[in-house]
Length: 112
Image (cartoon, rainbow, N blue to C red; front, side, top):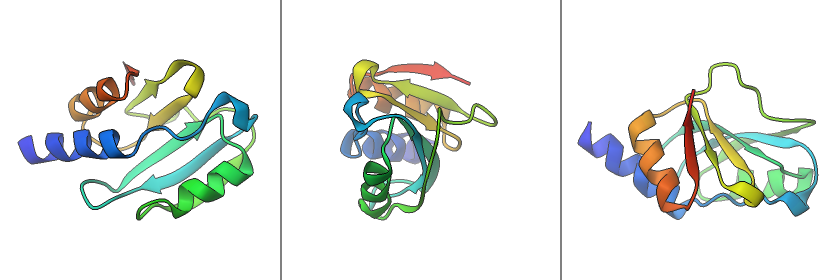
């Protein structure tokens, strides 16, 4: 449990939210993974098609797919709300660890 919490914090700390409101409408679903944690199924919003392509190539991320509108709420673990920078929706992971990592990014964690 402690190692998964540390891994989730490390993932959030070194994988900051990269989408911003200037990117335009839409969302990006992908599998987030790096050398410290993951994989986690996530969705960033807002994200342009170009930003989504970039997210899919960052670290060991994969499976990036852009879509219109907001991220799905079905099956989500929680959301890291970064205000004007956007939101990252988590569909996998330990909510406690993800909440701590979200705080390190200056975000507000919203469970479920």
